[in-house]
Image (cartoon, rainbow, N blue to C red):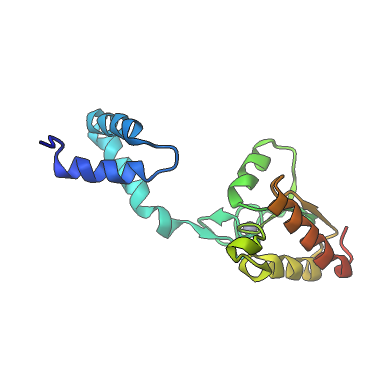
Length: 167
Ligand code: ZN
């Protein structure tokens, strides 16, 4: 007999779909959620329910943001001559946390992967080119992931940006 109430079973199904969460971790998390303060649980549920609607991509740099343009793009104190290119928006969070970078960002939203059918048009490379052409951009730092795909993507972008004349 399955003693788990149907709603708990549903919760477990959702938890188990999270990366790195197996059935045992899911059960531990469910036990935790069933015993915490109901107000905390409601607050958590509210965050989950509003997450996708609240967060969008910055129309300039493709970082995740609630306001468009994002806090970086709309900050007059940032160095607009510099763009750091990352694959995923979350990588910019880690770079920013070091407190050592004062330029702008650009998230590609992935890397080139011909095997999986991901070409230049599936990434935000054209948008990056436009930014380099129109803005005050002088230098682009390619900080793609240290993988074969990441290196290939960086090389591809370097070639595409060459005629524009940015470093
Ligand atoms: Zn932005």
